[in-house]
Length: 442
Picture 1 (cartoon, rainbow, N blue to C red):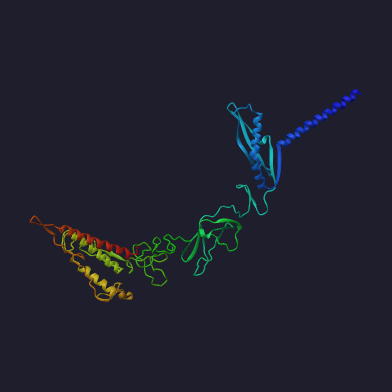
Picture 2: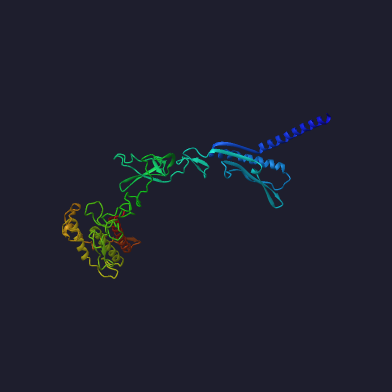
């Protein structure tokens, strides 16, 4: 009886102790392993990243308390989240070490703590996982990067408001982007209106039917509203390469006239042949290198007259510098201006149809002109002033004064000579400026 009683007591005690051990093991495992489940992957990731830093820090502190005697302890990697291969879950991870002599000994958080954040479905319908942002994204998402400088063609509006239909949305990659009209600029090139936004932000929506795509307008270097491909003078905002002295083809000769009435020159611009050197609209000049031979010019008669006047003024300055009363060359020879005066008479006749050929195109009867409305049809004196070239040749009498009964005179002849030279330089500068203006430069 006694033996049987002891056997029952021993068996009962063994069972109780086994239960205690099992309970302790289960409790320890429950403390070291956790898991939760979320509908979608991005929710699991967000939850994991919010708890991992604190969990790893707590695990490291617990390890330090149990290993206080180990030297060189440090937390290498704070809590982070990683997806184990083959699992629909994120695991909390971290790492620390202690130093055994000079060798670090590492311990990982996940070796003793199994904490998982599971998901049921990766992403909702219509979205896909973006591993770069760790988010389930729509094809068009409001967090997409904005578009930079964007230009859109503007449909026709009204005469009062050409930009009435200016679009404020653009379609790029199948997604819609929106711009602010207050942050936009407008311009027109070749008759097409354009609106340019500095930036356009994503709306998160797919493009609607009719939403325009960004476009690249033609290049307009000089900003004159004419594209470089149609602009004979793409670097001159005051010209499109038409006649009147513009050189659209860069051959040194002005572009031709608009004989066919199509609104552009017949030569010298893109898509048209180059103007030839003998073209009647080509301005050319030769000679005038010395004061013995005046320049010979053809083309624009006004520019030709400016060339003659400039040449004659230069020679007058040279003559004045040599102390000669009349315009002389540097070699001291007198200048014969009869040829120049004859050319000026011809120019006057061309401009007024009097005392000349009355033909600006050098006798070509198909291009006769009668610009008499621009000038009085009365003979005017076009002779060059050879008695000083427009400058007064008289010098004031030298001033005299009397001191202590003695009369003194101040010689001013040098000042007069200097004044003649300065006056001639002023005239030369004026003629050069006039030539610059007539040449189409402002």
